[in-house]
Image 1: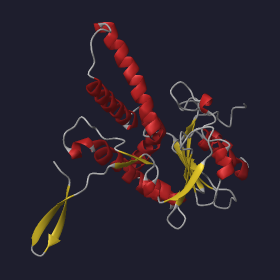
Image 2 (image 1 turned 30 degrees about the vertical axis):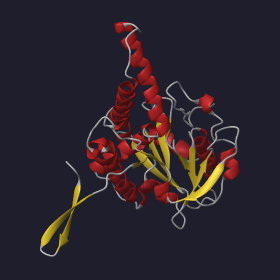
Image 3 (image 1 turned 120 degrees about the vertical axis):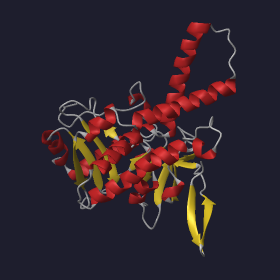
Image 4 (image 1 turned 180 degrees about the vertical axis):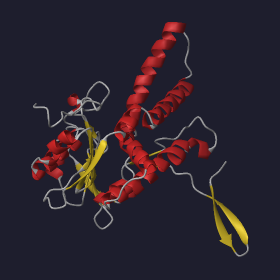
Length: 308
């Protein structure tokens, strides 16, 4: 069934077809708007990869951090069904997260619904990027091929188009499963949350296509999840005040630099800042630390309670 909007025209109702979105944001507009100055953010990419130089442009939040049809289920026939992940899943999470962030920045308490939506949003930032989806496709393709060859032998011909579309669909369904309430989402929801304010700090936070940092074991005593939510604010989740205070008592300027260092090092291809340029800082880090990733493609960070 198509999504429709109702417009009152005289004494009758006119039903208009709402366009199905094709720009799927892995960094939602409400999130990037926090970095906007006069409506724009600064984007850093390396279009030709290493060793070529960085490119930087001013962009509106809606014009970066997206890929066309990133979450589309192309095996489905109806446009609304193809866009189900974007329309019925991620946009709902992003809508709750936008309300939750506004509430937190305003000093308000979150309802259980907004808290759950924020937890899903933070975990979604680990799984919804183009790089992450491609990793799922590669892994699923290898596993399914291995199982198929073991059962049928390698002589069975494969319809390439059918195979690729199936793997594409499986990878997106896996992403949905990982963002749905479960181990990571529930773990975050059960932690104690803190919003750290750096408005008096000279430096500002960057963000990227991998903005979430988490510890080697989130469920341990010193486990944490941390993500910049504006140029001047960090969201921090911990199990106890000891770990939280280990972050809060650090030198503020040094903590901003350390956070930006981590955010850029673990980025895949995109970094975002306010319009103020951080060109040299990003140039020295973007795409130069991929060997630091674990086998699942993520970087895990030591707690400040752990000496390196």
